Image 1 (cartoon, rainbow, N blue to C red):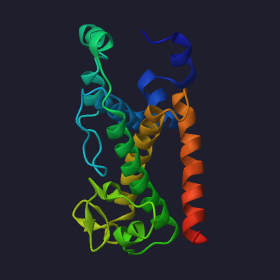
Image 2 (cartoon, rainbow, N blue to C red):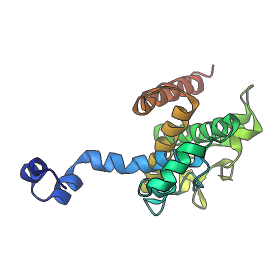
Image 3 (cartoon, helix red, strand yellow):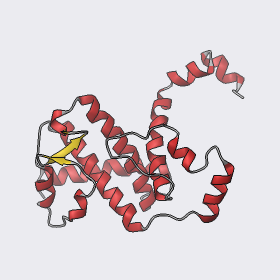
Image 4 (cartoon, helix red, strand yellow):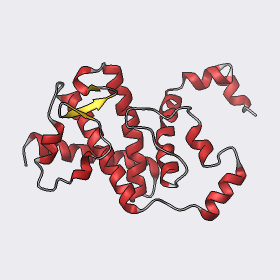
Length: 197
């Protein structure tokens, strides 16, 4: 039942919710929930540039509308191995970094060569990425050849999934605070890149 105070404040309940910027932000949390469901072996993540469709697929997989599924998951659920979670976090960091770097310096780059230039480079950094002409691909094109809207969509997906992956790694016991840590990781990576440390 919708609380009366919500109806009084903004008219019909659906209009009040749709008008709130927080609803748009909350709808993106489904991407983070998809990572959590994936970590519990309940959901297969779509590629980094593809949103979770249908939107309720991840939450249904962990029993949000089925108490029996939720009880079974609590009783017998197991997380994927730490190495898989770490690999996902690395993969999402690379995607997010390239998207942020592209926003600062639009244009093509040889992402694969750039990453291989790090002394700590591991081939697994490129696992799961689609690379075209050396650069990150969104859909079937290198990032420099897709629309700004496609780049923004991919960025929103990657950021929300990255928050969940960092939380699973233990960056902070409070889920929403992991987004602050994400910002500091970007700053560190960008400083290392810009100043060539």
